[in-house]
Amino acid sequence: MNSASISSTDFRTFSNLPSRRTAYLAHRRVAETLPQSGSSLPERVGSSSSKAGRKTSIRYTVSASYGDKESGSVNSNEYTSPAKALRKLLKSPGVHQGPACFDALSAKLVERAGFDFCFTTGFGISAARLGLPDAGLISYGEMVAQGREITQAVSIPVIGDGDNGYGNAMNVKRTVKGYIRAGFGGIILEDQVSPKACGHTRGRKVVSREEAIMRIKAAVDARKESGSDIVIVARTDARQAVSFEEALWRARALADAGADVLFIDALASKEEMKAFCDVYPLVPKLANMLEGGGKTPIFTPIELEELGYKLVVYPLSLIGVSIGAMQDALSAIKGGRIPSPGSMPSFEELKEILGFNTYYEEEKRYATTSSQLPSRKGDFSSNSNEYGVQPGIQADREQRSQIPENPVEVLIPEVYDKFSGEGKKGNFSMAWSRKLRVKITGKDGFEKLDIRIPAGFLEGITNIVPALVGVNIKSLLDEATLEEGGKQLLDFQDTMGDRIQVILE
Image (cartoon, rainbow, N blue to C red; front, side, top):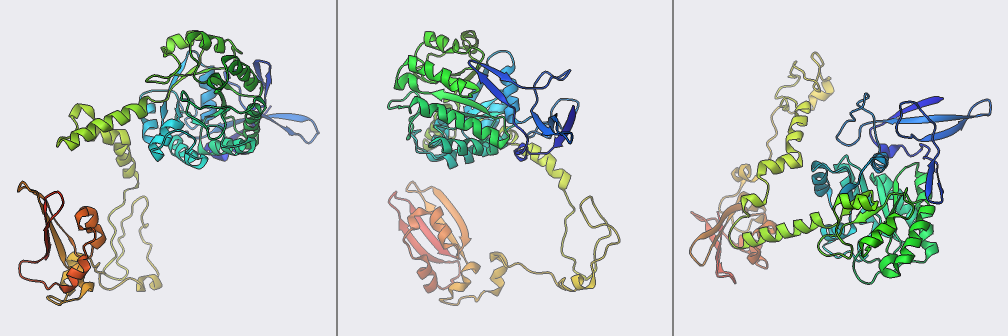
């Protein structure tokens, strides 16, 4: 047996590797692999012709880093693709929980909590990215872009919500290939019509049996063409759109078409869930535990495992508690308070969660000594660091002739004062040498704001004090002369009763 070892730091570059050939016979999936002593998992196997004309099997072992973590195997650089990691999880004992994420931060929190996988939800992404309901409004481009940010933020496999593939079978192929490039380990594809409806809501309709099957076949073809092993999760919404019997028929047909995992949404009882799991028992099943009052009864992971499920997902927990927490915080702020310390992490905890400490440590690897333009030609330091100039190397004469004799002085408002024409009227070009003092005093007599900004920053001042929108401050500046102690340009009360003063200094 010939072996080839391929190394890379990004699995997305392995587009030319042969995909695993998988045949689906009734409810059993038979993987064609070559045996190897000491190997617990089948590896990808391809074929190439030798010079003698016979077929020689080649086993490809992919090695690289995965995300921010290193493998614990003998080779610390051994790489496991998201799809392979997810397939390994599906073969491992027990039921596996995966909360839904909707952005990179929520995905990082899922990983930090110790979960083995997570999945993206169209409900959460539509809410977080667009502030809109999951009613077919979000596009393929928006979903795959959000998904790419999510997969790059974590090292656990992520199953992406591919909705209904965003069109016909050809659109499904594009969607699957896009999700593969985005770094997903799996993709959920459903049999709803367009525009689709959110699960457990009214108005769901499904495409014909034939079209539903063709979508999964197109997904399998896209996977093969991409040289990927992405896990295809086939979802049917026929339980609510048609009947339970129709949903079972479609589940069998979608497995025969090549789906790796089956998912019937909105099953209404424990008996229906058990009957579903009895369909092709060797094909993993996914349970959707919709929190807060969905059509499917809620069970514990142990109970779901006893029913026959392999994966269980929680689509609303993170987005739901996030909305609740933000509402509570906003109520506190509006009432003149800040959120209670127990309701949010400390600033130090936030920095740790977001990776500031890791960033600071890594930043030290690339630290350099402070470098300035030399004040004298050829006055280069003989000292060096790992990334600096080596001792003894001098710039050539042409380069040295370009170094200024005197340091360059950058003009900022503080430095610009000494060049201004004091007391000149109507010279708006000198606005940046002046300062506008903005004072806001509440009707209770307490000072709310007292700031100074460059007088030329006219657009910015309306962002700070919206009450100044529509006031022609430029005209006031043109007519103003600089007086001792400052020139008052405005003094008025806004609609809230606050006194607003603008003074030119």
